[in-house]
Image 1: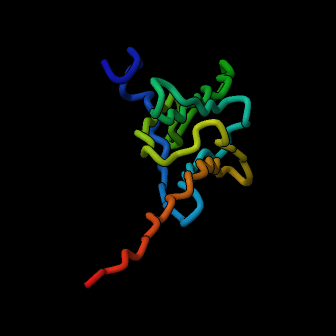
Image 2: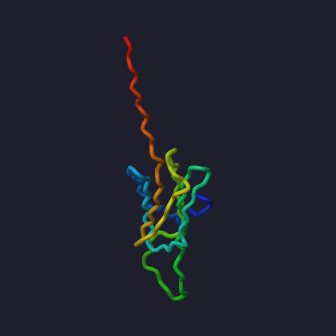
Length: 121
C-alpha cells in the first residue's frame, strides 16, 4: 500500500518548486483542476510544511465508455522541513490558474556588530 493507506495507483504526486528569495521561501505547486477547498496547507510538528489535496474521480455514467484515463486522480501529500529562519506565523497561501503558491517569510538575519577595539601602546 502507498501513502496513508491509499492504493498507489490512485496516489497523485503534486509537482512542487521551492525557491528561496532574500525575503522568503516560496513553494509553487501545480494543482490543475482543483478548487482551493480541495487543497490543504498546514504546518505540523513545528517546522514541517505539509501540502495535500484530493482530486476526486469523475462521475461515471453507466453508458460511458472510457477510451483513455491519463489524468491523475486521488490524494497527494508533500512535506517539507522548513529552515530555522522561517516565520511560521506569517505563512500565506494563494491559488491562481491551477498553481498554489505558499510564501513563508524569513526572519531577518542580524549582521553581527563589529566593534573596533583601540590598541594601546
